[in-house]
Image (cartoon, rainbow, N blue to C red; front, side, top):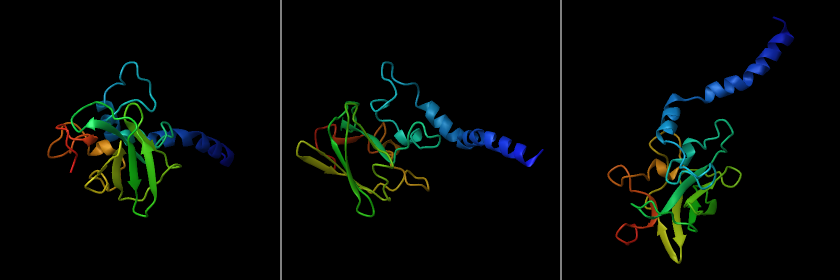
Length: 177
């Protein structure tokens, strides 16, 4: 094979190799376990509230776009009712800050162009004069890599492995500690 031909074939195989290298059976299984999209809700900012956003929004293939921090705010830790218009305040290890507003589904997110934090992160929620500070730092989800996906730790049901949903209030109406 000539040098020109090998370059041509090498370049034409580059996209295929990128796709194959992005395939991870563990991630594929985790995405499949999320189930189908909610009927009537198209993919976009309002879809899949409460699910681990960074599972798909990891930037592996460029679409969907990569998020650095993402999650959903609910009205209470045990409910599935969205809390729109909550400000999610984030401060990273260098002191860089951002305030993200939750949308109608309670979802919020940042792309690398908006905010590319250095972990660990401090998080607080603010709405209607109430501010709730997260007790722990966001450092990761038990992996070696930092993970800004709130649902990596905040999932159903609340218990020994999860504090429950990200929320301004507890199910009994109290404020999280």
